[in-house]
Image (tube, rainbow, N blue to C red; front, side):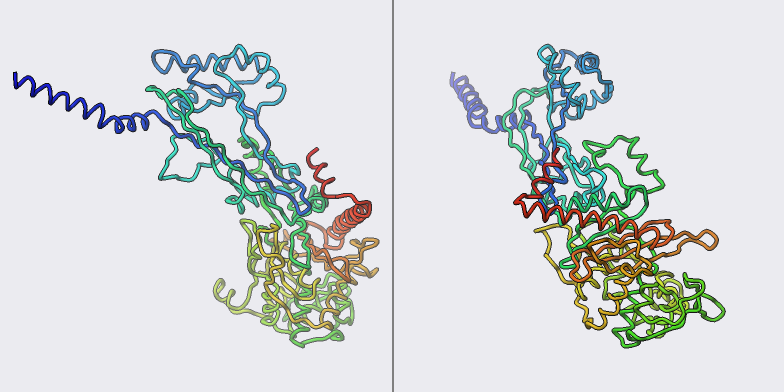
Length: 597
């Protein structure tokens, strides 16, 4: 009897310990086994231009989703796969959409992502949604699923500045790992990439209870995601559109800066592409077409393209000579149509020669002979120092990925890369913007802005409120007399009836400019890159630009008319805004309305 009582007490104690003492432990274990965490993607922030015009935003994308827990069938997984496959076939006929999921994709979803909806069709148009609405009541386990996708109202014209987004794995969360996630948008290039952290926002989450088979049983908690930070660009969307239009059908780039603070007002690269192709995801055929296009539309030529500058480098040679007192405004050289170094003739574009000319006229006429003579008298090291002070040979630091540094060659570079010393022929080539010297359009726009504002080198800025306004990189001590010579020659380039850039002349807006034509490629198959740098209005510059067109005729014939077209558009925009301001209208709000239309 005592033994039986003792055994009974032991069993009672064991049951009490298992059912009462360890109840919380078992409940916690059951909870962990039956609860699944689902990560919801953050909502991406909006991007505006400097006037508040929306240039990148989110729009709802409608998908047809199957909730597999409502379509499950008893028995093996194949029975549920069959039921889902039949439901998709029925929906395909109703929606008049081809099926996008095969049997293996359905199996993969059931194995790996069972508690979350299976998206059978993404980005469904309004006609298909209307057809779905007529049958929604008789289709169990199927509903419309809404997710945000990126939209770019200005499409091609701002593609290289904004970039685009793509699906990405969420960041690791080691303390609270997610069992499932819905892919979120991540910036791939452009501002979308460089400012991805700010734009991304904060992810949300859902807690789901699942049954023993892994199907969703109920939703325990839902924490909505938070929207990312909105950004405002320095870019003027209307000027940006005008810049893109000027390059349409060509290969090249244009950058427009505010020389008073370095703000980027426009930056266009051509050919371009439609960023909306990437929302919600780009078709493989479109991606292959863009990658294999010999015109290379995905390259942002404004910051990644490197080119010989040709004659737009000549103002640098003039500045070096003047700053180092190796020449003055009255320094003259005779141009017989060529420069002779040893037995080699370097031709001037004017085959009969310019005769005896001084510096201002040499800038206007872009005389090769004059600038080679001036460079040889100045010495390359002095030219190199001034070019370096103007930012050539290094990245500007703009808030964009993949910026090129170009190349400012010199004796040390040549010894390191070629095992040879710098020679007089190298100096001759660089003085006319040829040889190993290479620049980006952005670098040349920064250089032009520095000449326009009297010697302050600003870091180019693309984002308002995110980076320092008017960040000074260098201050160059140029006297008024030095500026008068160089800027005066640039004035004559456009405003004189004999200037090489006279085709850029705009009624009502005087400009200073320099044209350039740079040869490239092997002898016998040489091409030409054509340039123009310019600033306006001449007496109080608000715009400084650099434009390049690949495989053109000459800077004066190819690029100058395009600069005129662009600056006429800029002047028209200014005039319209001033009129609107006088009438008490907000041009920014009106432009925003047009963008949203």
